[in-house]
Image (tube, rainbow, N blue to C red; front, top):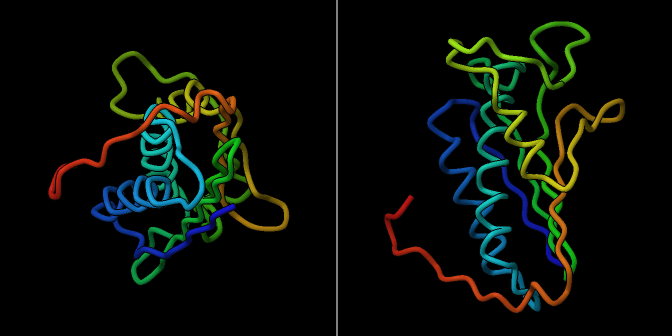
Length: 151
């Protein structure tokens, strides 16, 4: 098993850095070859959950941070985005229908479609988690590192 974790200042510019961190952690995990499609899904999910952390919790307040943790073993990936308290009391991440013309509100639907499972870390800690699992035979799909500077 491999575990990587870090913290980022809670500004939207750091969502892409968080995404790169997740991809890098999965690509260099010792003794595990994470399928390329799992790396791509984890990047998208982390991007959505980190964006939500900044927009919907106190982690996006000036001077605050969010924490990202990635754990990988031979069967799957568990990611966690740990945050400060939500901006609204008793606000729990959940799927809601977005209006067709809305410019936001679809991120958790994407997370729900891509993740094996996902949810909140509460009541012990604030934040969200996701799990991506694969069958051992899928692990043989090699992934290629993106060139430096690629997003």
